[in-house]
Length: 303
Ligand SMILES: [Zn+2]
Image (cartoon, rainbow, N blue to C red):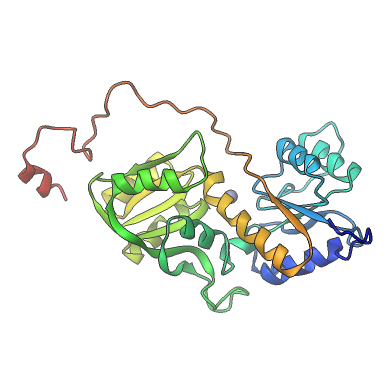
């Protein structure tokens, strides 16, 4: 808090700082980013960083006496004709305005930025020598400077897929979902691609890149099965929130360095999955070494 009682930082200052790091022109055409709620001239002493703007994270921001929320996911993505408090999102808009809390969104523009969402995710895994999984194409507003979707890097030490899955579950923010993986558990992994959020549209890019494994979120049965049958990298499916939460620390640190504001990072897990149970019996799976009493020779030949 400023001791003078006359805050020097305004909503407009925060917007300018974030727009500079995450230019709105870098966002996908369908995306909606930037200032969503707020008066540019309003003072900002404290910023709360969240992945999702939901009643629980708004309540947290109010508890923390934040003046501005930076969110990754847009609150209002599709056209709305009402923000009446009788609707879920309208109630959130009311809460924000009534409590003088501004809302700013950096979504796909923060995904392609460097450093961006996937850099923070890659850092949690200790990946080094990072490069984009899908570089922004020439002519794109975000082209160049290592920008693009996802990151590829090297693990600090090679590990099996089973080890990597346990490691990822340990270093990523905790969720009920944890991390699951697809592929041969003892496959050795040295290079990993990561993409924060729903990344199954980049499966082919991960295969083209020749990485040993690809970690993202929201993976589905058929695309995963077909990808593996085609000889693609092993896949790790983490909780969507857990893949994007690491970025919040980075954006908070940037704001603290650039502006005299305090920051709070929400650790409220907004992933919708709240319960996870492992099956009672061990899985019988063709990719699992426990699946058959096959000889080591048979196991080798499966690769
Ligand atoms: Zn996301």
